[in-house]
Length: 309
Image (cartoon, rainbow, N blue to C red; front, side):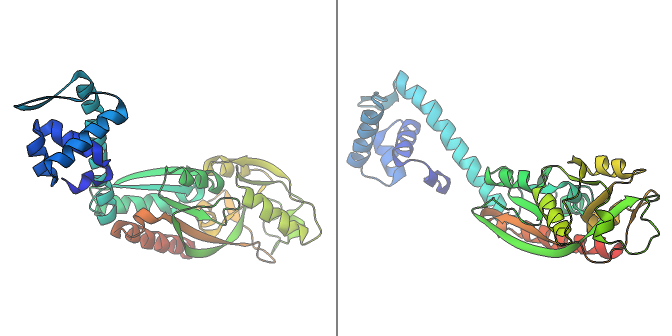
């Protein structure tokens, strides 16, 4: 019996071996069972499903119509089990398989594409699935099993990620991005009271951003900032900010990438807040060499993006 078949029901394996051999004695030898033990197992299976699976004769056994139907489904289960085991082996060894990654829109627009490009170059058999969103959305995707690696800035309040390791990569400060002709440009370090007088923009469904912004203004006895726009697109937010008086608070790595002739970062009187950047990794893939390599490359890329900015 193949080691891949160990995940299948014992009686199912007995049935498949007997159908393949066409003879109970040969099937028992293949399975390492006595012939009487295999006969009892097959009869118990037929009783469980209330169907006769084999016609028995002195020459051996043949499948009944019910047996042929059952064999099609049992064979499909065996194939699926073996394919799953092959994929699990690939995930453990890093020889092939898929990196299923969830990342915030800020990362997908900055450091992540280059890291993934380099990973694909060095691991030609590696497939990459990238799902983009904000932390709360991606946490649900992780919980549902759609992704194995989750790059997230800040916490995931209200989301318990079971079967996962969480490794903090870096801690980055938040920066303020505005249009180059914003009234606050050139006025020196900006205080929270000044910021509170302008509309803010941020990422859609990023509840941690809204909460932290409200805490920031509350410490100065101010009402929460007015949210003029929320979107899950860096391009949409940066376009909105250009040529307006709105302010955008983003993590420093994204602020560095966004700076151009139209967008600038403002100096601040005091730090806004720091954001821990973590990689949540499903236990199943945590030990893979390709996962460890990806994690280290990602850490270096984030730090380089900030230092280079």
